Figure: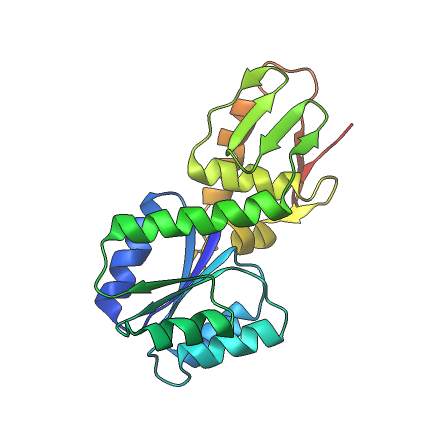
Length: 223
């Protein structure tokens, strides 16, 4: 799952980002409203955590524009405001939840999980490729009857493959969808994780699902 975090307090942003990444989420971040809006409009985040008081463009204005442009990702607002009127304005503008600062990280995490679970339940059925099954709601993976244990990054990588069967995915495409904006393209970390994933879902099976397209990237074959 990919999360966009827009927060102008560097210490708060760093704290939230680190905590979410430790839970296995890919986190893109912005320190100002204009940058956050541009990133949000790209439309590939599963959740947006948005501070209301931002330099450049405030959070409610960003939210209005995102909804106007049909960005449907759930939005969790962060703010020091706590009046009923402010909460109502935020929710009426299109927010899905509201968290007042200061907050415990575990409460933030619980709200993030709830919003993502709601999105998955509504939008994503089981993904099946041959005998490989991925259950987005429960984050479970099976090859035949065998349960496959994956790390958070391996799971994200497999989910991207399974949403794009028979499509050649370049390393740049994989980095954009599975890693954050600050990913270093000069490393071989993508190849390393693809090999990890192959060892778990292809080793011991006659049909190898993940195949290399030399000089280009990788493809999940369905036959």
